[in-house]
Length: 342
Image 1: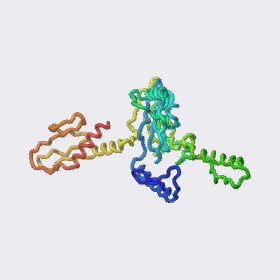
Image 2 (image 1 turned 90 degrees about the horizontal axis):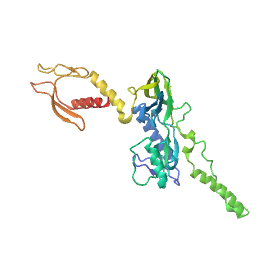
Image 3 (image 1 turned 90 degrees about the vertical axis):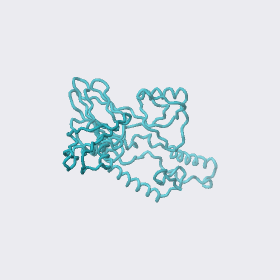
Image 4 (image 1 turned 180 degrees about the horizontal axis):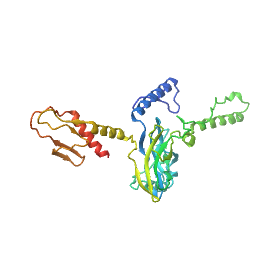
C-alpha cells in the first residue's frame, strides 16, 4: 500500500511498497494541476539568493539561489557531497535524504573542517553538538568579469537543452527474474547467476540520480546583456554599473522578488497610492487628497517604535460624509508596507 503525505495526503511509494498505477497517476495529475495554478499566481522571479556581489575591479559573483523561470522551479548549478567532503569555497544549500535514514555524525576533525568551510561565507555560524554527515547540495558562487564603463544586466535562465524532468538515462537496467536452482546442474553454477542477479538488484537499490549532472534538470545558467528585457524565460538579477575599472553600482530596482510576494505587494501599493483620492463632500470636509503628492496636517496619537506602527487622529469639526472603515486600515497598512519595502 502506498503511504500518504502529511499535508495534502498524496500517495507515495517507499522501498518495498507495492506499486499502484492508479495512485501514481492521481498523484502526478494533482501535483501538475496545482503547481500550474501556484506558478500562475507567483509569476517569474527570485525566491531566494542570486545576489550580485562585487569582488574586485570588474569582477562580480552570483551567490547560490533559486526562483521561478518559465513556469519551472530553477536553482544554481550544484553537486551533491557529504559534508565531510566539502572544501573551502563550497556553499551548502540543502540536504538530500531520500530514504529518511540519518547518516553518521561527523568526527571531531571532520566537524572542525566543515565548520571552517561554512564560516567562510557565514561568519556567525556556531553550531552546538553533533553534526550529521548528510548528503547536501553544494554550490560554488558563479564568477563573472564585466567590461569597463558599461551598464550590464545579469539574468538567470534555463539552459536551452533543459528538460521538464530528470533524464535518468544512467538508471540501471531491469534485473529480471531471480535464477531458479532447478535450472542449473550444480550449485556453483547457480551461485554464479544468483550473484549476477543480486548485483543488478544492488545497483538499482544504490542508484543515486544526483550523481549524474545530466539529471540536474533544475539548474540554471547566468547570462549578461546591455539591454533590459522583461521575459518569462529569464529572471533579472540586477544591473551592474562599471566605471573607471571598478563596479560603482549594483541596482536591483527592477528585480522581481517572489519571497513573500514582495514585488506584487510593492506594485499594488504603488498603484494604490498613485490613483487613490479621498475627502468629503460637506462644507467642513478637507478637499480631496491625492496621496502621492498632497500633505495634510494631522495629530499624532501613538507611535510604536518596535514595529513602526503609527496611529493618527483626524480632528472632528462637523458632520462629514467620511466614514472610517476597513478600507482606511488597508490603505494605511499598504502605505507603511510600501515605505518599508523602499
